[in-house]
Image (cartoon, rainbow, N blue to C red):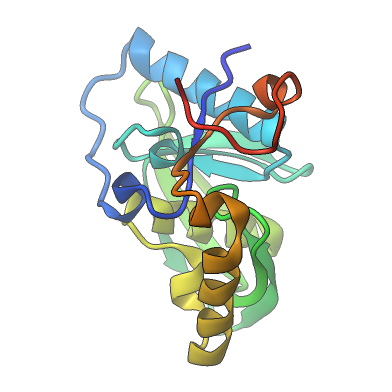
Length: 187
């Protein structure tokens, strides 16, 4: 397993636009593996490369019904229907709010070998594609909340132990199991 530390709200990489992937090599394949292992370790349904400190346009997903990855992803909204449902983020622990997203999208990009990938997504998978692509653009789900909910989310973040301690990188849950306390700085 190649579980990596997760970057938390406040880390500048989460607010930067990630760079397009140009090299499809062993390092990219390792990045995809690291993202999958870290996402599964944290119990997430998606994870973008900036969340483990890598500023490249790559994300992975596993909704239970669909799993995979996209490199240099894009999506287009299909239809006018929207969904509103609970959304959280591994980079903002303890914060979960109903978030408005498109119900359906058509996602496209490349796989880790540079081959084209395209699929239709609906429901949770569509939410995941939108959430993770936002990460690659430096956008967090709390930016999508209405003003009152965003204000409440920011208050929750400011009051959290990890944020008030200035922690912007959280070690993996496997490492945490052997530490005192829930969040730690990477040494």
